[in-house]
Length: 258
Image 1 (cartoon, rainbow, N blue to C red):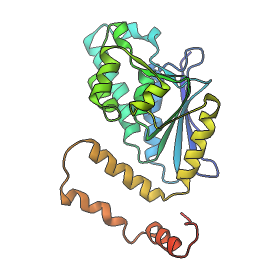
Image 2 (image 1 turned 45 degrees about the vertical axis):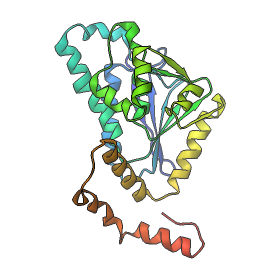
Image 3 (image 1 turned 180 degrees about the horizontal axis):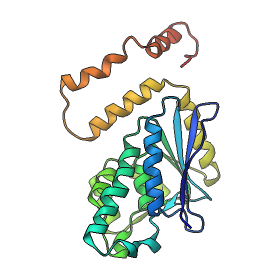
């Protein structure tokens, strides 16, 4: 039975939940799930009402890698392998990474392989004390695909990435925090509530500011200096209602209403 990727309706705070599910396999990602993730990420990018999205796995685990039972179907021919990584996995990850909505990874248990790649596409990564992180695919005889390296490298530096790939290291939550891979570590029982608190706080802030911050951060992540002509459109928010409301609320000593 194939796994699934689902997106909840927005709650009263404008929050949605993107859930990854593959029961009995610690939510290991199959081809169908990658395709669904691509569509869900595309749908989110078109959503002008949602304030933040919590990305989570079902059943107490985030994602424990890919569904290895499927691998023999496409991994042993260069063209089918390239199709899988370039036309199925990479588009899903880039669609998630390019989403303008704040994404909060609620990481419980295993965050391995494709799970780590999905978490790397999120803005905040909150995890439990017993969570673990890695890409130990060298044990399976294959490397990480180039586009996927590029995505993970935006979150961890080359030193940590080499450690993960060349030593097939699996990091504990405290190690992941010390290496800048996660945002916060909390008790296992508090991960869901911490993710919800974070999302609810973000929902009180300016949605316009969130989107513009994410776009600027993506440009910065490419590592190329920008020109004034490229930066000037950023300031088009100047006369916007959210900009006026935020400053008015501060001067009037009241909470802003975005």
